[in-house]
Length: 375
Length: 263
Image (cartoon, rainbow over all chains, first blue to last red; front, side):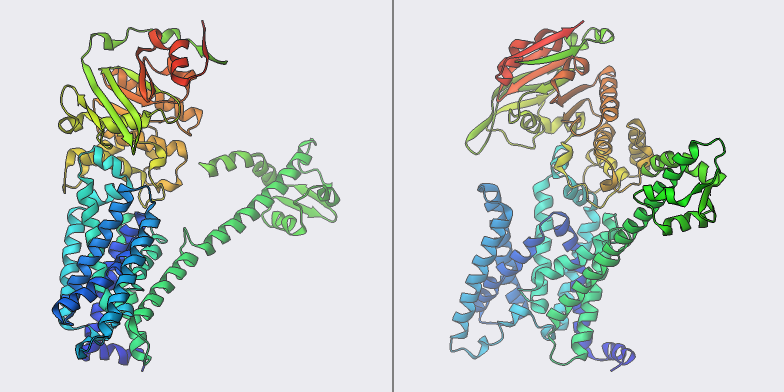
């Protein structure tokens, strides 16, 4: 199937369209909120929340006996929220660090959830099959109503972001200062955290408990590499997230038997890896290139400075000197000499070199230039 | 025995404006504890309007805690704080705060100007966005601290001293009457230190009250006109020329200090 055919299929095929739209919206909302989690250094919180949601799904099924996704998601939401506020409680009330609290709640809730799942599976109830889909998610089960729910919650989330943008930014950067200015930081904190929980719960059906946190973190981590503005970061993370959803769905739909959730997560990770390497300001590649270029520049300048100190001792600055003399200088290579000639700083005549007017001036100003560069 | 050499500046010998003034900050019976151990014990403190005051004391003496409790960031176990006779909640707009530079993540995706703009958020209140007026105020504050050329810089690309100036500018934008600063001279070079102290002195000249957590005892008489010695309990508070002496230093730091004033 080529790309054109696939795109036509997305628009004509009901199921594929639903899934594509669903994963795109999900990616956008988790990317947006994930930026906040990353900036708050609460990357692990997403993982804890999604794992904490599992017992809620099981309990909701046990109580209602229904596998309707909305019922189960309400259960997930409740237990996700309980887990989150337990974590907060543990951190504020005891001496435990937040990573300890996160790990504790994550394994406690997940363990309990698994226990309930095995208990449910042993029951003589034909309806029970399929609950374990929530472990790794199954995008194929997405219905139009699920996508509508995602769209509405994403819309509300967007409105809240627009309203409280200034407060969120202030809180994320300097919560204590926000407090002194009279902002209720507990309210802002609860608001942000609740939306993160909501976004995670929305994604459980598609991506699953185990991989959900990657949806939160990967687009945000990738977006951070490309921009130094919070607005751009959130927008970019939403775009990366949405594209991860669309591409992930496309790959899994065109290759049989690839489950959608993991593919989406892998696509999101590809965004991260690409960003880490190729981002112009923070990426590894350009940093290395800049590093090498800077070092070459410095080598050249040092050689020029060495020549300058020799030339200085003569009345005529262009007095020729033997090339051998340069061997006394540690950083000297034939290549640097050639480059200096190319730049018209030095002229060669047989085994002799002499500084040009331009070279002399440049060398004299080297230290000043270095100072200007630092500014 | 530690010997502290202090240069006396004749030009700084003006009358302290505080003697006539009102009480800007009043702290009564303030006790703060993390867990079981008290960090501040029964602090009574009156800070007169218009002083430039240093809070000095050893590490763990509760200097930052005192400021944070006055500003309502920390909840005390007992005691009360009032700003010009009213609780802090009602007087927020009179107070500006410069936290320790290390208390935030400087890799946060934002620019210098944006951080300074945050100083206007308090008077804006919820939801309302900063506009041209706020931007103008922020640019003026940047100008005052000599950081205008860096307004579009990403904050992680600023040096430690520049970051401190940004924090100072953010407080200046608040246009408050009382300024609380937590170690504004920590990790800054001599040029920045002089630039900052000049701004603080200017603030005092225009009648503001400035309260600074300070570590360098040598510069206390040169920079400040009022001082509070703190070590869990309040040891002493008053004009530098009256109470900055061996006795109080020894009581606060627990070792013998000798102040030698070089005339």
